[in-house]
Length: 366
Image (tube, rainbow, N blue to C red):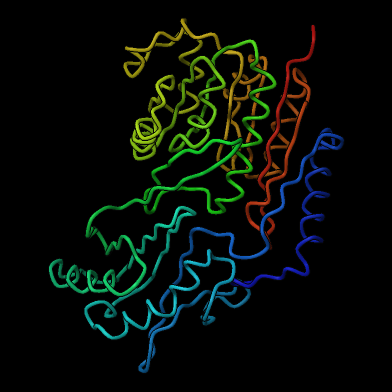
């Protein structure tokens, strides 16, 4: 579809996703909430190849059915309006300066609901730092761009910073999140707000009596921070050093003091809770936590055997999934010990086969 939207087809496509998800996880049938996306201008991130002809440059994407031939992209109604409106004037301005256009391979956009715009220009050749920076600064002076980054192999030029600050609202509250260029962020920010609201609703229901939360795969603290006030304490883990640093920045930015973020893989957390010692936990007393809920948001591969076993030891499991097939596999095991209490489909990626979902499980009575 290459950036196109089809609003007249959206409801049917969403219904098809719902049917597919319920076919994989029938136990969701009477519990599923469906969160529809806005049908256009829903992506806060966009990446485009730049194609060079003797006469001009143009944005290009490639049809999987014909991957050797570029398709010109004049506009992208999937992208946030701020991105869509910037695309043409930006490329025209770049085309007028050889230092900016020569060797340009790709342009990436990162926008926020709160109004910031970061643009990354990626090149096949090494850049002249001073000359490129001067030319890039001229773009900021005439276009609605807050931050520009120049990249080539083993080179990264910053005019100021490599991140934006997003403001997300849910459940009558708001939080600020640092989103770093070239790192994972939720692309559909309005849907991300629905996900936070749903996770807060489930946490409020299951944790009214108090208790602590263990979160695996916490990223930049997206859920940890939004859920912190609903738990006594939160221990959040993440394997990416960049994401851990960003999560710590976000904790300070939001004034959250009851969340501890550590750099550990999910498998290591499982081992630590079984008594294995790790230097990274030297200052953390795991035995002092009263965990009653685990929150997992794994990659497409889903949970590994050890993490599934760890999850089954908790009274409540909050599971955010980006792959319904691996979710179904994991639930086929977790439902031996837990019941599905609530479920949600978040249409993070309209007009695609991708399904983002959430499930709350509660331990079966003994």
